[in-house]
Length: 96
Image 1 (cartoon, helix red, strand yellow):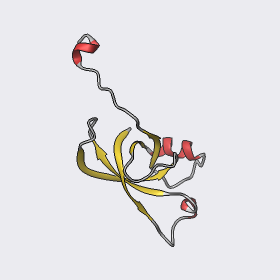
Image 2: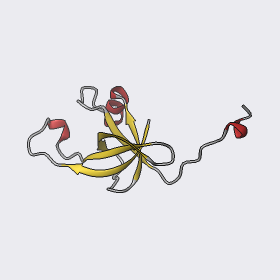
Image 3: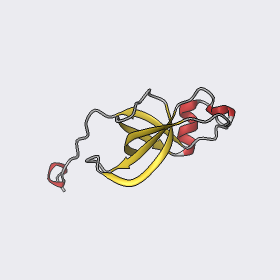
Image 4: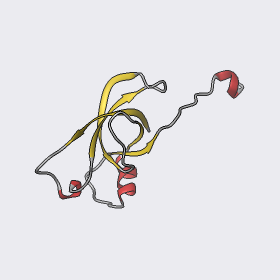
């Protein structure tokens, strides 16, 4: 899973039929404090996310195909959640 921020969208006139009527978004990868890592991923949107929103991305082909219910889909990354808050436990909280 990847934490990220939606920074843009992609529009194409010619594409694989799987992408017809699907929204493609550019997600900048971040650390748990939402600081940019300098990397990005292009995702299909399964939760109606928008530019500027913090999102959770599934970046694994088989899982992405399961979410889209298409076992032959040419897809790897899917936005699966909009993030409201991230809480990171410290080592002390975990008893380590």
